[in-house]
Amino acid sequence: MKIVDKRTTQFTHYIGRGSAFGNPFTHLPLGATKALIQVAAIQDSVMLCRQWARGDRQFDNFIPPVRRTRLLEAVRKLPADAVLGCYGCKPVCHGDVIIELWNEMYGGKL
Image (cartoon, rainbow, N blue to C red; front, side, top):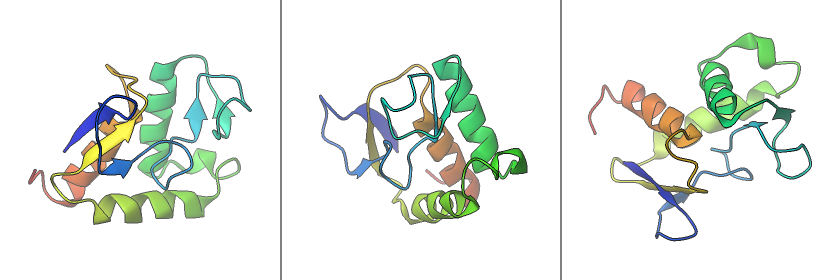
C-alpha cells in the first residue's frame, strides 16, 4: 500500500476530503476545504486525525461518530496493493494513518 499525489500519479483509491477516508482536520482556512476543524499546522491535522480515528471521544461533539465508522469500514475494504491518492502532503499525510489502521486490522500483513 502506498500514498501518491493524485495530481501526478495514478491511484486506485481517493483518500481526500469528500471520501470516506477524508481527514476532518485541516491547517487551511475553514471553507477552503470540506474539513470540520481548523488547526495550526498540517502535523497537527495528522496527529488529531490519528487520535480521532482510534476512537478518541473528545471529538464526538464536532465530528459525527458515524464518520469514524465509515472510515474504519472503508479501511477494512482496502486491498493490500491499494494506491492511495491525495494531494501529496508528504512527508506527513493522513494517508499514513489509513495505512497504520489497515496494518493493525490485518496484523501487519502488507
